Image 1 (cartoon, rainbow, N blue to C red):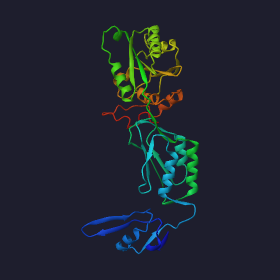
Image 2: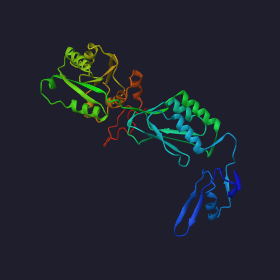
Image 3: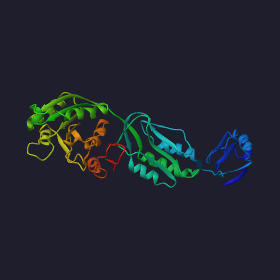
Image 4: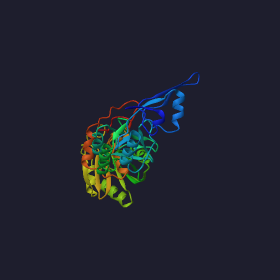
Amino acid sequence: MLKIKVEEAVGMVLCHDITQIVPGEFKGVAFRKGHVISQEDISRMLQIGKEHVFVWEKKEGYLHEDEAARRIAEAVAGPGLTLTEPQEGKINLVAARRGLLKVHVDGLDAINGECQIALATLHRHQVVDAGRIVAGTRVIPLVIDGKIIERVEAHARLYAPVIEIKPLLGLRAGLVITGNEVYKGRIEDKFGPVVEAKVAALESRVIRKIYVPDETDRIAEAVKDLKASGAELILVTGGMSVDPDDLTPAGVVAAGGTIVTYGAPVLPGAMFMVAYIGETPVLGLPSCVMYSRSTALDLVLPRILAGEKITRNDITLFGHGGLCLNCDPCRYPACSFGKG
């Protein structure tokens, strides 16, 4: 630090807060630590009684915290994000549209592994609304070696985009409702409305719904019929347990599907299934989807509706954080469920 006359401090970085007191009118911080002193600041500092200030000694190759934060934010921000102006050295990344938050965790770790860097995000794979702050960044000191920021920028290029908001695509979905009891009218369908509401909440829609009995060939026929009708996503409800008449996985395979995973380390939702017929995802939904607020479906559906192809590894990663605590009231997605 340097002690310097205020008249000579223009362009330098203030190392301490300067308090101003106007009796009966104001008492507070007039200039905050980290402020870059301008020519217009000089008269006010002299009025406050500050003829000397402590500033950081300027060194070639060092950056002020505001410039450093801006460079980090610009490096990590992918599509669908805007940046706030720096405030006390921090810049926020804000969702410019509603969509799926994606964070490249390896890239995030590499950046935070650099000394004196702080980049914090929300959990990835959740739907966020436009205007939501999803990340914030700053450097720890008031000034930082520019070489550190250059390394951060290199990490960001390697893992680009480190942070982005993927748009929801508005897919056409088809729904197969299985079960003799519903097909024969013995009970009212409670499954379909729940699934339709979840799909609609993510800016997609169910274009057709087919009721079938517990028969493999009828399930397969319905799945193929929906695909031929232009369904870009097919959801099959029920028939997912180990009872002899639970035939949904067999019906999907008979329709030409390839099962990615039957079973997920998620509670509720352990009997969840992900399959594909060509590029068309087919999801087998266990009964818990009908009555539980948050299940494996809620973890997978937003990603599919943002255009992602689900792998077995995507599902196994849910194990860490895959236990729902059934909180009352439910706070999902603002909780730990599915956030491993």
